[in-house]
Length: 114
Image (tube, rainbow, N blue to C red; front, side, top):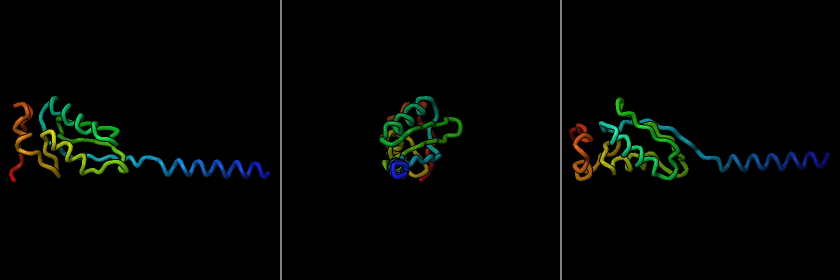
């Protein structure tokens, strides 16, 4: 009987320790401006290159980016900044004019007025 209780206790401790180290995966969707397949590749590459991102999918028709990431490693603002750094405006971050102007002609989307 003591062996069963000891095994049960050890098992519960192991399960509890695994749940403490479980990833906190969060999925968010937000608008990212762009036009074409080149934009899609650039946006998704910028996001998937971040540590903690498990999925990134940008839809050129809706201009929406679905991204799944580990909140313990990365903040949503970091994802917005990474997208803006490669030339694409988001709801929260605007790409610099220098980076935007360096995009190929087909990638130059209509920018919002400030």
